[in-house]
Length: 513
Image (cartoon, rainbow, N blue to C red; front, side):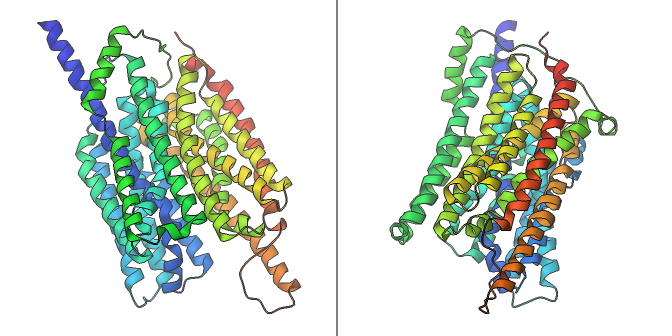
């Protein structure tokens, strides 16, 4: 009788943590809508008469709000559910503010109002991200790499899904209202599911198989999104019908439900596997150490992680934020620019999934996950050098930006995973937030300062050399970003060395006992 009761309890706990994961995936998808800013920023710019600099500052305020760091402390102190509620309110208010601004006939200080609204929804997204990641890692400690990769892939893919869901059905202004509704309702509805579930003694191979199935669904969803986006460019006439766009919207919803649902039938199949599978996951001390944030900031490993993350984040954000200009400077048509955006988005998603799968594979073999950070930094370095060396080649530019998108995606899986490995899972929310200022600093240094300054400098030179009175704010030629690529490549090389030092310093954590 006792054995039967224990088995029933274990199965209930297993079902509970999969339910938590489903809710966490929907919550983090809501947070990922922050990447859709480019889909409606042109409307804000034209309606409120904003300059490009003012728009860039608004985007920076959103990044600062997302990565300011307080969300993790709230998650650890008040729980993931309360943090998700708070995040849903903030992100909903921020988007609503932007929507009202877009509808207005003008306000006293539109640049400040837009920047403030962006900070609010960015800050709300930070709470959703921290809540979902924290509870997912705690529910699946032995598979935290793959789980973080799965969650972060949806965070990166969310903007593409939202654009496919609504942007082609409604206008840009109404799209902001749709974002406000989705970003408020979805996390608020799923917040109660984020109560931390017990971690049962499940067969780990069966659990890994189940996670792999969810990963495959995300891969199919990402490929389908890319296929539809490219079709819109090469065959725009096929999408003039409202019914075609509504069909895509329905398919996006069905795909999202498929990714975030873990059916009872799957659970029964997993239970059959558990009778046959052998335990293959070793045990190491990674993730078992409990560092308070005050102690973590005094550890050299935190600062090595900080220095390793900074240039990769800078390279990724400088490329993503300036992708249109990078391609147009090489003479790419608008359609090619749209394809580049889609390819980078998909590479970002797949990079997050790949990093999660690879990191767990390394950990199971007693190898340091931090070695993947070395690889990620090296990829970013080589990609930046490739962009520098290929001049005005459009096809080779696509190769470079896709590589950067993949590396940037890998980074976002590695940050919380490595943080939990090095500093423990108990305070993962707080310690995760300690590393995120490196992302903000990377954005400021490499995107806002370096890339913008170099581009503007060569833009002004083009204007001086132009005999016609052309006021277009564009720069053409390889010089527009050459210095940015070279300096960022050098920074990524230094980041690679820092990541190698981190790997050497933490390799003992992963040794299987």
